[in-house]
Image 1 (cartoon, helix red, strand yellow):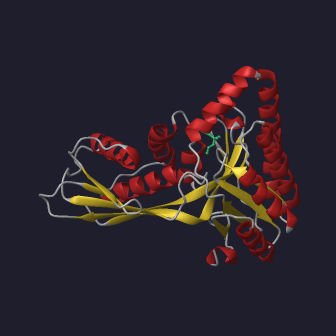
Image 2 (cartoon, protein in one colour; image 1 turned 135 degrees about the horizontal axis):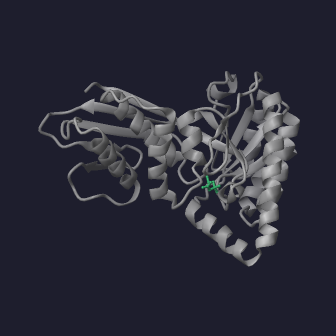
Image 3 (cartoon, rainbow, N blue to C red; image 1 turned 30 degrees about the vertical axis):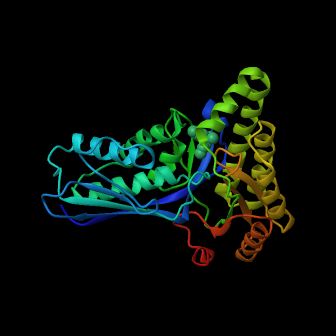
Length: 326
Ligand code: MEV
């Protein structure tokens, strides 16, 4: 065993959430900031394996009854790791996990912390793993947190590149344009439970299947149009697609007063597009700005409109100065 660390990015669904649950395409990007980090270090050989979630100030010892809440995905992740890699020592190491990704707001914090943890485990115990296998393992933890998620979060976070995703199908990796995308995220400060919002949408669809299905189909078309614009670096067209997508998300009842306030604030100061990201009914709003100066304006507008936090970011791997200032 060697001391090891693992990292993973947060993500934004730029287009297509909710419709993706019903088989339509969605487009997600990994973010340059914020991210999650895990450290695996040795301990006395007699000591049990310990998992420490630093943000929650909680720890769990392997061998104790299965924990509930935030620790459950990690205890399952470690049990599954030990089962698949039986030579791994069952004592004498500790895993510490830290994340700067706000929780329950559409940035994929659950998938990111689990990905960082598994990367640290793999490195420490010399396990070679394909990105697909990483994504599949993280999907198991996502099911603990979110019921039956589409799988978009674990895919984009494990792959670490923009992806066009369709549930149950091979994802398509989408090359990022040469010119950086200036993204701004504003957090309404209202936590949502993805599983509840998805279930509300499912129930509403049962009562009006025709209407909901045609909205989902429109979202799918908007997503494909937006991805073409993304590939060409056509910010205005991509921003327009985000706005059109937001209109459909409002129509299925997953926007909110707080989300609408942040979106208006961003558009008022010149954002090319803005929409909720993730399940909605709170969580974060993502806006696309034309330049780094424009992104700073949107960030300030988010704060003035009541965002709990707001930050400028970009796509993981794209060189944007703005990230350093977030
Ligand atoms: C949540 O991040 C995105 C949803 O589309 C649910 C899912 O894809 O599982 C709302």
